[in-house]
Structures are given as C-alpha cells and as structure tokens.
Amino acid sequence: MVRMRKSRLSQAKQNRLMEHFVAGTTARCAAALVGVNSKTAIYYFHRLRETICHRLELEADSVVDGEIEVDESYFGGRRKGKRGRGAGGKVPVFGLLKRGGKVYTKIIPDASSATLYPIIERKVVPDSIVYSDSWRGYNVLDVSEFKHYRINHSKLFADKHNHINGIENFWNQAKRHMRKFNGVPKQHFGLFLKECEWRFNNPRP
Image 1 (cartoon, rainbow, N blue to C red):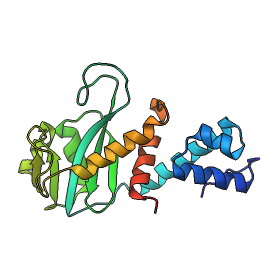
Image 2 (cartoon, rainbow, N blue to C red; image 1 turned 30 degrees about the horizontal axis):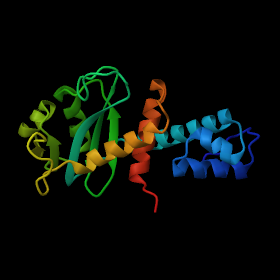
Image 3 (cartoon, rainbow, N blue to C red; image 1 turned 45 degrees about the horizontal axis):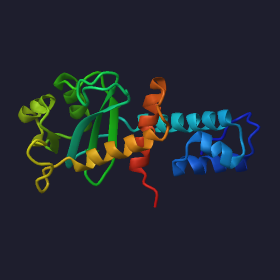
C-alpha cells in the first residue's frame, strides 16, 4: 500500500482512492467519488504507478522458459496515415509473454533485430520455444539457441499452438485501458505501460 506522508488525506480516503485505482477508475472520476481535489487524486495515482514501476523493475532480471510469445506494438499518436511499424508519432513497445504466466514489456527505439534479440536473449532461457509473427526483426531467431516458430498473419492468425494470441490480447487490453485517459502524457507513458503490465499479471478475481 502507498501511504502519502505529510498528507492531509485521511487513511480512509487513501484506501478508497486505491480501491478506485485497482478498479481502473480514472483519477478525476475517483476524485469526485471520494470527495477530494482532482489534483490530489492525480498525484496519488501517479505515486501508485511509480511504486508499481519500481517493483516491476526489481523483477526485470528474472528469466522465463517454456513457450514464449514475442511481439511489438505501437502506442499513442493520432496522426492519420500509416499504422503499425513505422507510423509517425507512436511509441514502439516490445512484449514478451510466457504462456500461462506473466507478460514483460519494454519501450524500444525500433523493432530491428539488433534491438529485439538482446532482450529475448536476456529474458528467455535457451532451448525455449519462441513464437513470433513474420516480422524480419525476428529472423535472427531462426539461427539462435531458441526453437523458433512464426505465424504469418497474411495467411492465418493461429495454427494450433503456433500463434501469438496471448501477447496480442495483452496489447488490446493495454490500449483499451489507456484510451480511458484521452491521451497519456509522453513523459509518463512508461508508468502507464507498467501499470498495464501489472494489471495483466495480477487479474482481479
């Protein structure tokens, strides 16, 4: 639990704000429901995201094995025109999901093999099965210490075990959550991304 030191907020109101945060309520809406200033709720939610990000950073060196799905996605930007890889004004993010386990995300400068492979190599145990789409940035996996299978989305989206539905489900969930904020400040995007990672890895009962 995050307790704001030197805060005039009662513990009861802090608890209610945390409940609304966990429920996915926006800070402004939570402020109205709890009866606090919107700036106070925004600040408290920001502190919660910082705490989540810090705890996830402590787990960043953990490795995974088994069946792993990898993919990249692009967030933000409302410019018309090209979408996906190479789209202007968007933030590229790499995701790695252990089937039946947790997702890991990282903001990346680009989707080249020089960027993607070191992350996979650091996070995935050798001889694990890695599933990807047909993006050329994953070609290096064909001659790596991993067992690589790829899905060609231009032909089909899933073929028995050969799919990346899990990580794509995470992208959809993350973007759906972020849309509620009508734009996430770019300087805080990493905090919102880790919040989505935390939500996915800790589903509500």
